[in-house]
Image 1: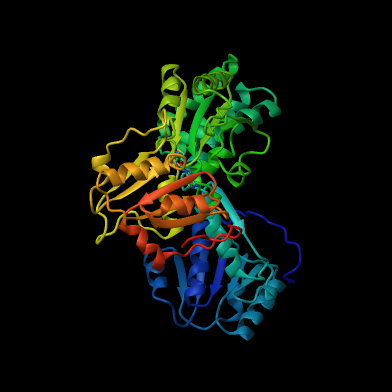
Image 2 (image 1 turned 60 degrees about the horizontal axis):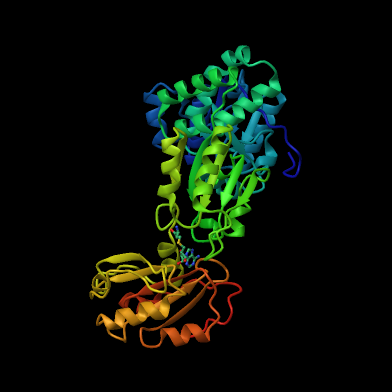
Length: 473
Ligand code: SAH
């Protein structure tokens, strides 16, 4: 068997099929378990066995011959696994097996047999098999781990539910194209989400309701309010990514990075709603209304917001209107700028020695000033994080000094945090305004104030690719 050869992938029913495993080590054990899982009748031949075999034996899951392999062991076997640890013996077994037409797998020597056991992602009835054709089992396993992480365990429940309704829906929704659309909509949308949240019985009623609505042509959409994180697409949550790939229309604002936006389903309609200072491409009330209208048209609507939707994100306002209109929605948290920027700048927001609390405040100017509880911000042993504070920085710094915060207090300004353009300016209350003016920081920026800023000297780890010179640091 040539490892570069194209293979035929086949999911075979091994129920009650006779299988022989020759070998008693851990590899033989692993393969034996796989055969048992598939329902095969497994006979194991090995003079010595790994202790795991004892359990299988006492469970009645296998029969065992505690001796060396003999030719007649092959008799009547449809599947043979040679895992003795001896290349010569394994190859001999493989040859014998092939002469009687059995399928044979040879451990660590794929070319000697005629089938390999792929790595599995098991969400029975859903089964994903990965094979590198024997070229690199480690690579197959790495890939398996990645896919494992992307496919929640509850996909098994989703597949079961779909299986249970398949025939019914065949009779209730005419035309395979129409049925496919229906299934895509439900499995990738509301019903799928309910199942993945573990609410099985609710999922049944949602599916039944969807069938009714489909028959009477009143499909109702829903809205996903999703936190897109601070910029680096690797910081999206699995759920955010999943929903991004199952929507019809997306409303996004300036803070959502291009790298994140490119992960939204390609044929979804993209609507930019602005949100730059003084550039509100779409007023908030219009956004709120649009979300409702699109959902009423039966669309799956993604409202993608920078960072976390509930932290200075007006997420609350947007879903209030949805709730009032009885539209289904869910909220997916994102990594907020404070968490993202702090990590990527090497500044822990709390620290046992320097900071026992952390405040998130907005530095957005209204009529040229910021209305904050200054006395609470100037307390010792805490960290203050200011969102939207670039324009107001001189004013904010002035106020803090006025309220007796020492001029030597460390402060960091993180610009375009977590992205390849991240830039960090470090200073003290006394000199930060000059330093920021001398640098070319670009919005968005986040300000972090407190002794923890000093830890960056030791803890900085992130080296952005194309930042301008990392100015004063
Ligand atoms: N909901 C968002 C915050 C929206 S307010 C969140 O949870 O992060 C917008 C402010 O967030 C910006 O003015 C800036 O202060 C901050 N911000 C968002 N992304 C940022 C980034 N990548 N780097 C620095 N600051 C960021």
